[in-house]
Length: 157
Image (cartoon, rainbow, N blue to C red; front, side, top):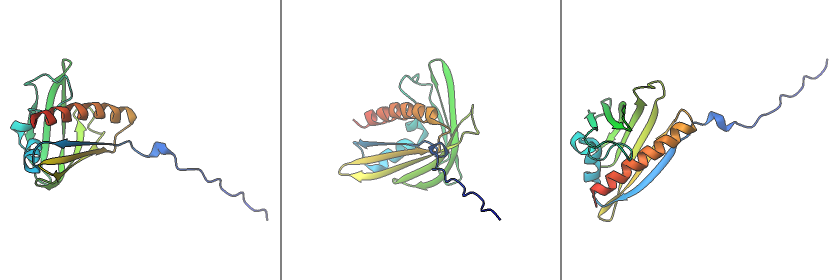
């Protein structure tokens, strides 16, 4: 009886790991005001959307509770964009976790976590977006979130 060859162990391929991104900002407002900017539709429309988003094109519907849905839309470069999801975790003034999927690619669902920590008279915001479809999606969202967070930061300056 001959010994069967040993299987060759392969290293874990990085392609199996979905890309993610983490952005941090210190905002000149207490956590309650920053949380309201994420959870009040009238405030969200003032900063949501990447740089270049047409002013007054942003619309938002938010049902901020676990299991509640959100939908936000905007126009950028003449193109309509709409994203939506479901709130998975809601801790007032501290944390929001929600699914994220564009209306054109609903099968590409990812996950966003927004954490707010008091920092003196301001707030340290950490946005973690994970489970991207691919690196290109991650890079596009990094540009979009950076532009949005720039506008959010400007609201409190």
